Image (cartoon, rainbow, N blue to C red):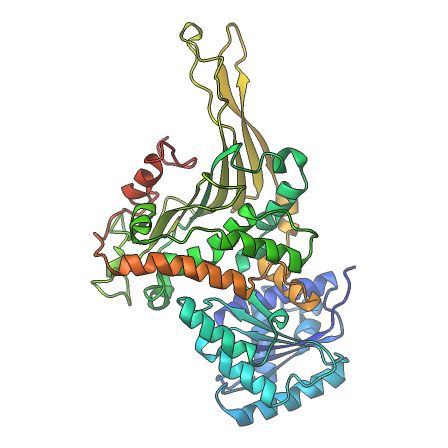
Length: 490
């Protein structure tokens, strides 16, 4: 049985899609495993008018269990609801009274987690009233969780952080990125720092390049209004991809603690080269999908302007100006309406300086590069590509794969990302959350790309649904005499 954690949760935006689809089911998983037992309470808030019973019924439905499930019934009995206007100071007194009641009922020791699943423009307002109206005046811990986007550029992110910092210290702020809760993202550290074989080769002497691909098969769907003001660069590169890249590029931390891990990630991001105009134009590519079989072009999607120049695809080359990675590029790409849905990291090692098997008389194809592939989703696992002799007469070589994939049973038992991250918030462990310094350096890099793009008129649309993006993404890597490890029709 897991160690029980004690806390009151107050969800702002408690009737939203994220809460019902991800947050409450994740908390129920923690309840079934024993992390949550008797000493927890939940207040859901939104503008919607609901009774406690109606809210509990909605939460029960979101859990996807049978109506007779006694665990679910007991779990939702800890939930109450308050209709709430986040801009109305008086409403926070009502919320405080309810919070104090639950604290006494469930013996919560004043521990409180405020989960802000609402528009970022309200973060500062909510944080300010939580402080001034006494909801943080307890003997326990106070932590605030915020969902992305953390601003839309560095300036807005700075304003957002300044507003939060008036009420909460940095160690109390948990900027949630669900990618950091994925099993195989957390495995990056285990593979690197738990294996001498890997970490000893994890540098520019042995690694030729590293590729990160986040591919989405679907289009914008119901997120069009939000997405057209964001795009792939802001929506995916600034947060998810930058977090993955920082884990790949960081130095080994002094200890496996959130303070030391974050410090090394920040050092890596500080060394990331911020491009000038010419470099940004050369090293980054954007795209927008056109029409395909039974698929409308992005500009024809609902709630998308017909002249939109928003990017639905990004590919780029990142360079770190430090001793470990100087001269080794990191290639990234992400987009919508691509060939399939998957996330993977491909670490391409350098070939032997001399290929003794490729002399003309051997009639042998040149050796292929060794590649370590980390499959993040939908399947979790690793593949290491080696060269070996073919079976039979003569001496020809061929690439073979050493594979490990999490089996179906273990995969089913793997915690969901939000389950992991909510658990970490209760523990006060910030390892898998973005610090302000990480966010700020990522924005400084991305802002420079965005500024260059704003000065140029793109030729959109420039890729078809079901492809792996525009031709320029392939040309980007081919200019360096390299190619994507994952590619169509190879």
